[in-house]
Image (cartoon, rainbow, N blue to C red; front, side, top):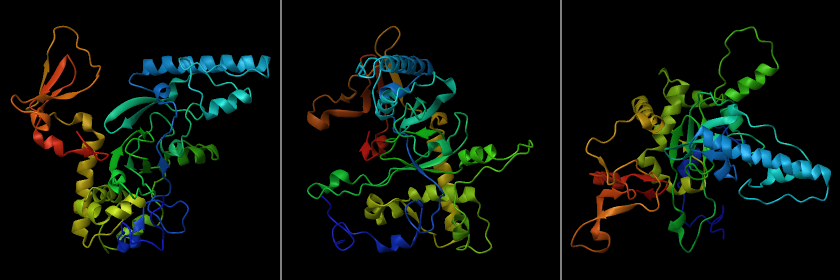
Length: 370
């Protein structure tokens, strides 16, 4: 049920100053926007097939799918009344394959250059078979990551939820969560993920198809609109600001507690709008904060582990990393939540993690603590 509209904003009111800021997205509006283009994360509708932790596993799964699909198409060609076999051990039939089957269109063979490194969930790197026919929706991602070797950065916003649950509103109050990545993001990477790119290399590829190649380097198309940088430069006359500065400034602002608190209600219902802070010094402080956050979030695998944490192996032999149910250690003499020792995590029967700092409990991803 919709609980508010333009004439009934008394419920969960927004801050009207928010509307004066420049919006990040520019689709379906005549307003000026910061980014020229943006995209939802990839929606495969067959995650169990299209994602894998290793290239070999992904190859084997997708090869099975492709071979089986093409065999079914051959049967359809021989018998127009044939109905495809719903064998979930061989394939997940989604819209592109259902349509392709009815039209008797075969799939291309497996292509290794369609294996992309990606992020399935925060800090969970996977391999994706990135192909329009085998992904239900790729949206604008081919413009952002046209090849599996493309270097780019994207700010992933958790999107919005326009439906407010009136009876239990807090259940939907996840708020806006921004994470930066350097690879394709899944549709539910950090919510209904909206990806705002630093560059649009796919536009360069399209332009190259229509021009002669004289071997000269061409400029990478920016992800920013023509109005974006001048809008922020105008607030600090005579001060140097680059598009890179603006990109990291946005990231810093999206992590500002003051911004997230004041505009929490707006951010639940609209994609972010970005204010211009009062002084150039404040602007550059957010740039520096955004750069440091980007370093931590994008290159999280290079961050030094917490020195005090210990990983203990409780059995002899090659450990298993399969998880059935992780649980906290127990404090003797106590019951219920009080008995949970949150400095110790029992990963599985083989592995226990000890000396976890209690401050780690404060870290939240997608409205969920550890």
